Length: 70
Image 1: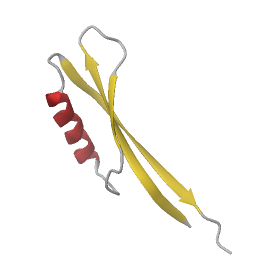
Image 2 (image 1 turned 30 degrees about the vertical axis):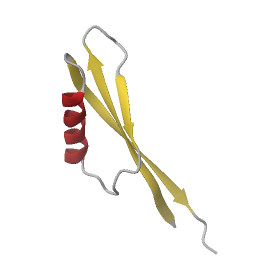
Image 3 (image 1 turned 60 degrees about the vertical axis):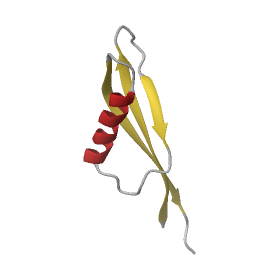
């Protein structure tokens, strides 16, 4: 049996003139979040970032617990 314990989204943004992306993470995201909602979150966060910042990507990390049944 497996149980989804948590979902985390990390939005990665690129600032003009910088090679390393800026990352903003969100914990306790709803289960079964859609790609559309993840990309929309990236756009919203980028809109709130300083000028000349572009949305690069988003990473979804899920933690799942696998339990051995008797």
